[in-house]
Length: 255
Figure 1 (cartoon, rainbow, N blue to C red):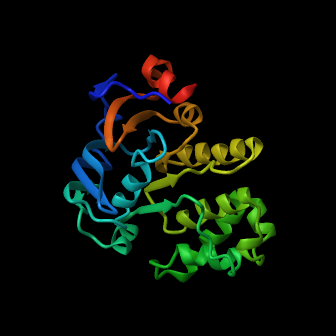
Figure 2 (spheres, rainbow, N blue to C red):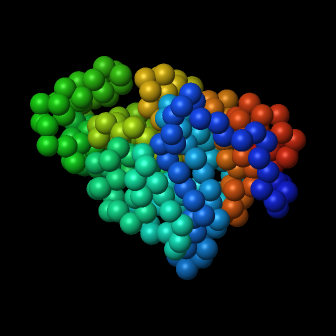
């Protein structure tokens, strides 16, 4: 696999929808992971209502970026701002309460717990039991297959059903920003199309999404804007439609 030129290029600068201020800003972020510098000099902005995708080769640092935003790992330097507030040193549960949720790579179900129990876990920061129960029914309306399996152990679901559960579980905290890490991983093409249809439905419902996805073509087709990450650095930034036709991106990631 090739790589983009080793200098950051902006095909088209990010523009705010209307007068919106950024929902998420990342400034000069450096992250060490396992003794290795995984991210360096990262700048990113996401506006409310966008789908922004982060593409790059395996090991480029994409999942590390999501884990830093979720506060599962600490940055070495830099700042992460969400809805105007600095969250760089907050705990993971605090950022969930503020409105950020992640559907992790590999789904990470509680395999020996039911679908219903997994959804309840997604709402662990919420004290409003009546609202939680109402949201569970909304999730079952959005994911009818999960409704049919509400009492089934999560570990016995198919891969596609587990991915639906991972997304539904993340939505139980009522996030404004949803972080999706490799939602198509290991799934058959037909199921992938179903998952990305769900992502578009969430987008239309007003959920802001940061999407990490190995299938770069599908990710860029679904997104408003994209960032290309190479060896821990942002190399190219642009509108998703422009990245789809950029020769460097096509050669390195689109085949």
